[in-house]
Image (cartoon, rainbow, N blue to C red):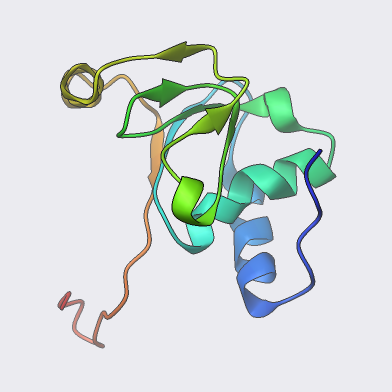
Length: 110
């Protein structure tokens, strides 16, 4: 059982990102706000819309949050992390949702 997130700026951002995902996409997901996007799809009854792939090797299922990030509940498969990166390098995903801590107005990342 997953709890719905409380309304917050982060939830609004995650909901907006979820609206951009199309049926059948394979989506690489990172830590931070982007990790909340699967929960939004669960709330909307659209969990099966995309397949989540995580650098640590999980494919499918529901990515877990916080210190459990990198694991998935009910994953379809687990691959060794190096194999997951080969999959990524081969173009095996449609979108990547990543978070950044500091980006300035010129697009420079700290």
